[in-house]
Image (cartoon, rainbow, N blue to C red; front, side, top):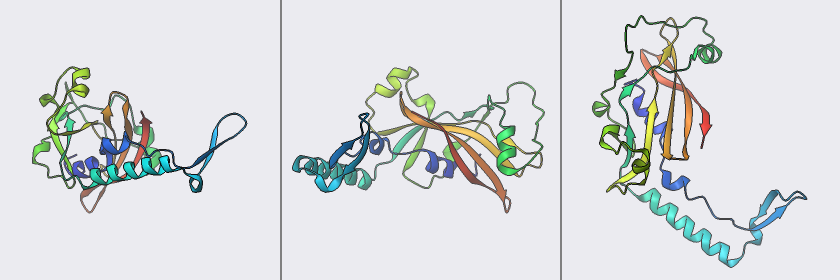
Length: 202
């Protein structure tokens, strides 16, 4: 988990400001007989649409140039996945046997993420620093750019410990986020991400 953590953050987390502000309609809308939109002819845009698009593009440029760190909440206590991912591990990596660790009691472990250098614009902070109440968690006015919350489950390995799979997700609001399934493999004694599949979206 320590080796893949920086790439996990860069791959899953995103700047919510770009997601919650989609581009405006630009052009003439065409509908079918059932009232479903089938195309937009951008050559038929009107002046008002051009102004809205120009404003949207300017806002996107401001966001992209913003050098502020994007703060992401994270619970460093990693729990075992409540799903058996053996099937997915086998389908993706063509392995037949999984690693079954002998664990007594709670299998939760804590990742020391503060000592893991990240590559990009995200900064991770412990979930304990944020309000416990979910409504307050999302409504509070922070004095930093709060981007959301990320989570990961424990890794399920194959018997030879060369391949693994885990689940994760990123939330940018109460009804905003994605769920992912992450496939990892060991290459030259280093763990890397092989593929990330989306499992849910809100």
